[in-house]
Length: 64
Image 1 (cartoon, helix red, strand yellow):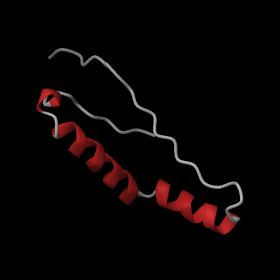
Image 2: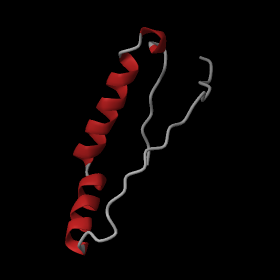
Image 3: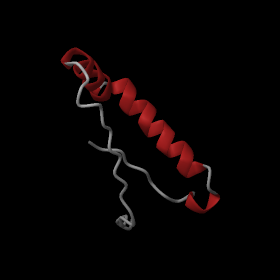
């Protein structure tokens, strides 16, 4: 089997207001670190890729 070749990488930047209280910022952080968030993010990216037939052979990997 041939080794896959990376043709592009995308960066998603998530920001919060600097004035957000610490408790709220920690709540956001807990969501972002959760398995459910990662699962939903992975599904969303794959759905976008699958919507374009020309990307049918593209393999998507989501990592942190």
